[in-house]
Length: 234
Image (cartoon, rainbow, N blue to C red):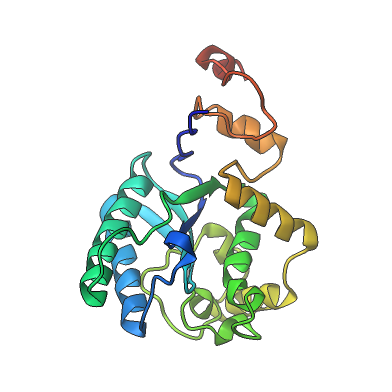
């Protein structure tokens, strides 16, 4: 069966995962983490992608980002991936692929899942047993949102700004939300759908998204993608 094209829709947040080949480590030092973040920042600006959150784990990195154009996210990820592989291979005196194929991405329902997705990303090191609290992990955007450091590569989403009227109130509200953790149904939905590349949201969200693409966006939707005429009638 032919592989579905990656789902990329401008103006909507996307949860992105890029894994190391055979789950191998993609970092060997703090300098490697810094290089990848610098490449993400540079190319996010170049291709018009707003990066809302990220985490760099040993064998993968995850992001939540909103592209301004249909080509913005693919171009950004291609540029970051190629340049980082050249850097890493030269440094390690190795050859060959570093990545496990193409990156995976899921379009996220802003109202229902955006803040939950940010918390999911922040809590990855906690779930992996690396730290007890998200604030103790150096290579994620949590410290920025908790007011522990300024991260120039982060573009906060409007829903974060709505958490409070002052920086302190927003930071406190966000840190408290992450500390509470995710509800089991949120954790399950984010885990399962992020791996499948399907839209992350309810049926109304799926209908809204389908107007923007001919690609099937839900796993349970069988048959041909809806025609352009059908989309226009919705």
